[in-house]
Image (cartoon, rainbow, N blue to C red):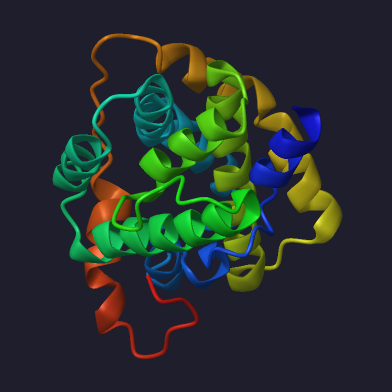
Length: 204
């Protein structure tokens, strides 16, 4: 299932993730996030939000009720902008996977990590590998957003993603725990303030 895994893990998957910064644009505009702090920021993101999202991927892969999972995930996203972004990406991923598999494999009203977990299960991708793929493409998408917001070159971006590999693996291991506590107010508050920016490159 390597080809399926590579396809699903591709950060260029046409689901619209390139249109979202998940609050990063606000943090950069306000001076909270810069080139020097993006590495530590993403490590903290993986330890908190990354582990939580990977858990939703794994629970969806195992067959937990998709709508209940999606509602629970939305309840953990205080900012309307981040909730809507997760639903939009989930809807587009569902449509894409349904087209790829030529079957209604995923409902189109689920948040992104839940839809991703179901997609991985339908493609016979192993549970832990699904979590790794999800966080890998999430980090790649966030770094890509930072490249458009800050002077980060291609080599620097690739090195940044490469150096985050052990933190991705650690987050996926943590996602196997029964309960995960996630406290990430900074990106959520930034997402909520995003519509107030005078000029915006991203939707969220």
